[in-house]
Length: 262
Image (cartoon, rainbow, N blue to C red; front, side):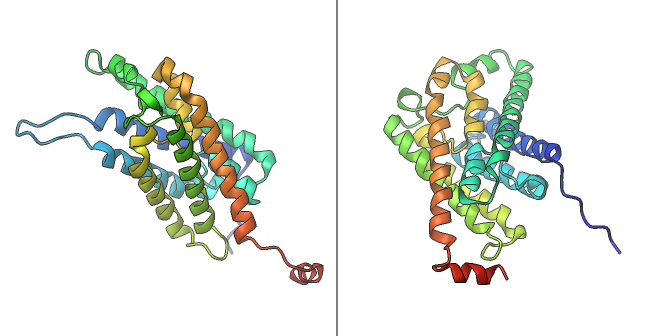
């Protein structure tokens, strides 16, 4: 007879959140900085992975983290997801600060290791990456497509809300896709979000990712960072409360609630 699995400790859950966020940031931002515009071959073929490759990097690293550490911590790896899950009633508010701190630490470690690699790169590589914003989020002159602050705010609220709604849907205990498919669905959703919104503001939907890159992105990235902290959190909260109101119906009469508890 096999022993029942022990519930992971709080420390183990926080370590899983830090590791998952580290993987997401290190893999995706590393792709953006090292491989997105790598160069052109002798026959004129572009060697960089471009927007599509970066978008896939975000989706694939998130997917890997969910399958590796999701069973331990739930696989949030994103403060907006943590707050969205809390707003939906799926996660205890009291545990949110610890998760968010772990995510911020994991993301910062990810970009710090990219910097350490860059220190041993070609002459000027690291300085050029930092002068270019270090793949930070931005609007106006710091937007890849020249989109203003209004576009960035709408995009961050909307795409984060979509992301959290998908997460809440595919992980639902009775209506979800099941653990085997949830990670795939969530990773592909993050991929499509990046495909659509990288030209707008370099895509955040995750304050931990935005803070991690802004640390090394210079004054402009830090000055605009508040947008990519506030509005993904707003989008996550909207999604959480909306999911709870729309898809977790309350019984119409007290008698029905009593019957469900029997």
